[in-house]
Length: 154
Image 1 (cartoon, rainbow, N blue to C red):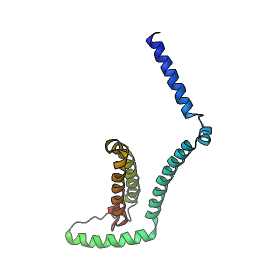
Image 2: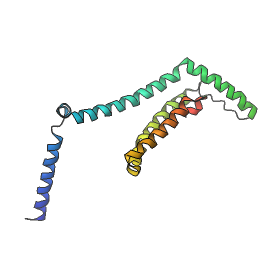
Image 3: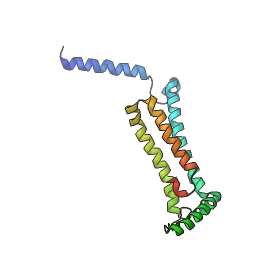
Image 4: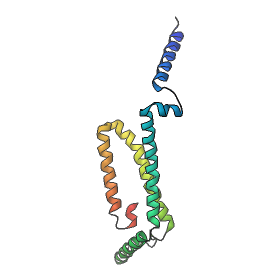
């Protein structure tokens, strides 16, 4: 038997084995395989939460209470900056381009976190990568929730 013939037999057997493991394809596979259905739901939930976070932040930026609080703090910091001769006349609250940047940078941070966490799991193992990612997330949430000026959100 030639080596090419042996390779094709092995490839055929491997393909048949993989097809048996995966079962039916398409929507039927989701119903028949509960593990695949659970993974698909979990992946959809991640996409939903990603979009929900963007909606919450963009909605927050249009709230009058956010504008009032950040504007009052910005005016206090502007008075301090004038005393220190560091003036930023382009306010985060009134400038719509900066508001868009707040939303975009929030999403960019989530995207970068998705990119590096896979590499981190390969380097540190998933067991150690998860606490590192959680620590980075907790620090980010702490900075965002304690932001005294809208510029801290960047």
